[in-house]
Length: 131
Image (tube, rainbow, N blue to C red; front, side, top):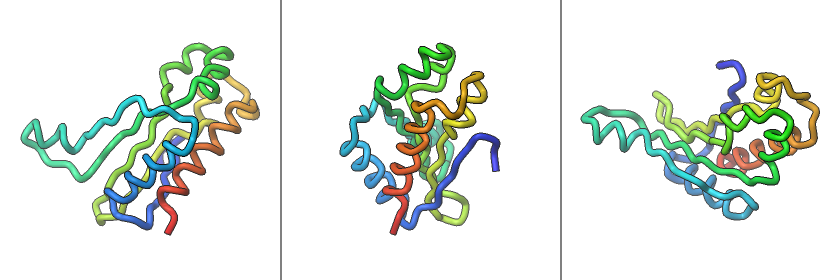
């Protein structure tokens, strides 16, 4: 396990997990800022990569309080979720642990905004991955 990284196994194939995650985002107050298709980029470069997509999303109500407390945390915003297929064909969702990010930037991990982000990210990953 990588320090500060949370990975959740999905009960669904890559495409379905990605669709479920994006649908869950639409039901929240989150804005999708970008989609980065790493596998598509690999193909364009003549290389291969299992399905790998980063979704960048967020809400100023969640991120701004963190940046008010420590502006460099803006390097980690907007939030990101990586949906990827592992070497066994299973789909995973990975994201940075907000508690780890808070510690990295010298913030109290018990801040309400950190707790809210932890809960939101966990809920989103769960909705995308659950059977």
